[in-house]
Amino acid sequence: MALKNLFSAFAAVMVTPGVFWTERGSGRFRDMDAIREYALPLIALAQLLKFPIIGVPRPAMFYALFCFIVDVAVLLMLSGIGSKRRTEPGLAAFMLTPFWVAEPFYLFTGSGWIFALCAVCYVLLLQRYALNRLEETGGYLLAVVTVFALFSAFVLQHGGAIFVNTY
Image (cartoon, rainbow, N blue to C red; front, top):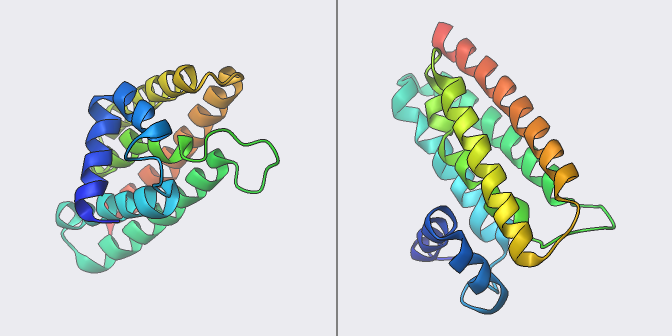
């Protein structure tokens, strides 16, 4: 996938989710592999943004690799890989966008939780909006699991940030 398509999908998910889900069903985003062409490059870009914030190459690389693994694990868990009942294949990949974009701000030890809370709220808003557009049911359980997974990921990443800041 071209970088232009990645950024256009990113802008559509973050700014106009209604247009995005309409185009996901029938338009230009229909053939996009959500995990391979959207989520993994976006997670990698978010990790690269942490390098100048941390400033020391070795801890930055270890922390970015750790966060990448945590993010991919959360993505795969929420996308239902290996389960028999699956919703729209790209739902988790597109709804987790705010959480990944806010990750570089988790490094601010005193106020990282504010960015995480705002990101989780926006993830839940995108999730609710997408489920309404796709006419899916069972959004409450998915919302509870999403909140638990994202706050667990934040705790892990914030613990890594404290380790990196004291290195």
